[in-house]
Amino acid sequence: MSLTTCLLPFSQSSTAPFASTCCCHLAASSSNFPVSSRDYHSSFRSESLVLKGRGSNLCRRFCGLKFWILKSLNLRQGSHRKHQTVKELKTRSEHTLLSDERVGFAEETGAADLRPEETILGTHLVAGSHKAGDTPSVTEQFVDGLSDVPRGVSLCIAVVGATGELARGKIFPALFALYYSGYLPEDVGIFGYSRKNLTDEDLRSIIASTLTCRVDHQENCGDKIDAFLSKTYYINGGYDNREGMSRLDERMKQIEGVSKANRIFYLSVPQEALVDVACNIGDKAQAPQGWTRIIVEKPFGFNSHSSHQLTQSLLSKFEEKQIYRIDHMLGRNLIENLTVLRFSNLVFEPLWNRTYIRNVQVVLFSLYSDGYGIIRDIFHSHILQTIALLTMEPPVSLDGEDIRNEKPYIDNARWDGVPFLVRVGTGLIKHRVEIRVQFRHVPGNIYRDNIGINIDLGTNELILRDEPDEAILVKINNKVPGLGLQLDASELNLLYKDRRCRYSTEVPDSYEHLIHDVIDGDNHLFMRSDEVEAAWKILSPVLEEIDKHHTAPELYEFGGRGPVGAYYLWAKHGVPWADD
Image (cartoon, rainbow, N blue to C red; front, side):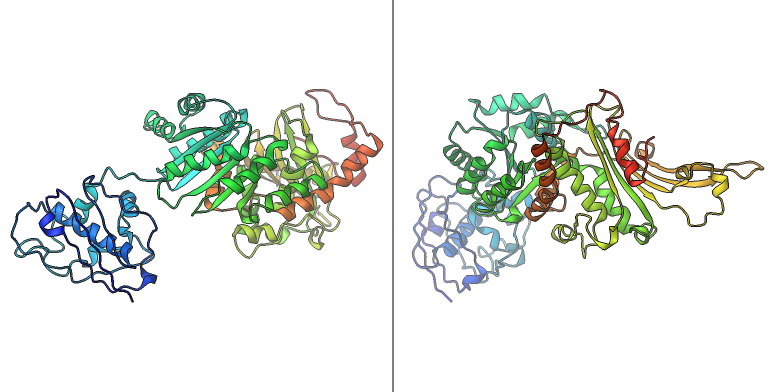
């Protein structure tokens, strides 16, 4: 328990006769009053403040509140009405006094721990005059009169490499889409960081042309774009990231004010610059009070050794829970449907094993790839993560860590002997992304003669398609209408574009999905360090074998179906490719 006395003189104040001396005799538990080390800044420019005693912060809050109440009641200088003391003060430690729109004031004055609406004032403020609870609310007057108090932001998002193609074409549009749809707080701060000598307005002009509003709701589009751009700032990092991150940190602190803000750093930088940028963020720009998260683009190293070095560098500055290794292809709706279909539908889970599944085929025909190669760029992250989610054991919950803990890489009893065939390539006949789960033939099928000579055409199949048209298809056998008994293979079709009336929401871009997950702290679609290491244990021997024997890839015709050798691969396992 502590006893506090403070002296609070207000020069040339209309309430000087009443507030010239503020004596606070308050008994309070220190655990209930999380005091701030900040100096008090009043919205009234002429006041001075003198504080004495160990509990000066507590007294400061009370006297500041007391002074404003008196001012809000328009007390006149020279008034001889008797001023009575405040008898009761209730506190709380983990709740807020004011609504969201008033939080800025509560943080600035330290009044967030006070609850005037729960009888802060136990007696008349002025004899024969106002009582606690009279309207208009003293709290409303208290806040409205301090509308000029600066309010900080609650979330800062920095895009490092802000002038690059990825940032301009994907990251900033995704951030605006989240903001437009209400998934970013209004008090967000967006920061662009690069080596170019630009201003805030220059950055805003660069990204403005890339911003579009949702097709399904375009209300106030122009106003939203203007509001988003007004929250966007630029920092010239120069060629020394240590100094650059210090400048970014200072600019963030200016925008954050006294708020307990969180920070996200999206590292849209070349691999050779990744470690330097990340380490300097860790040293110079982490959030002083809130959490910090970094988003790292693939590839995550070029082999086992380089990947291990990268992981150790990141873990030397950040905890594992702060690192989000992003692969935009894992943000597709198809990937989320893998676990939903399995674990929310009884019809699939009992069949999800080697007893019923003949093979699994993952097909990704892309229009382009970057210079890192398909194995490092696509296979390491996207393909293996897709297979891991497809084959995982049921997690104990949907928590990101629980899902990560159950991701295998096929080598278990459930999938023993089941071939997983992967076709990945660029410049092929069309853009195509799908997963096909082929089931075994029906033992002793009595309709075998009615299916036709190719029994594979009668194989049940689950098809999860992302491109060209997102769909979930189940291939079954049915009787052809008529007097005869002939069977045909048909597809039960959930084609998303045909369900627009039912699913009116536009499917978000994968970057929107994944950035939203980072904000929420949901990491199940991001690779953990042990997952990265396990993937390289599979792929490093393949790359080493290719380098050792100088193996040249088989060429194929642009716009064709791929190399002929791929067909020999399925013949080796007795499994045909499931083409259209």
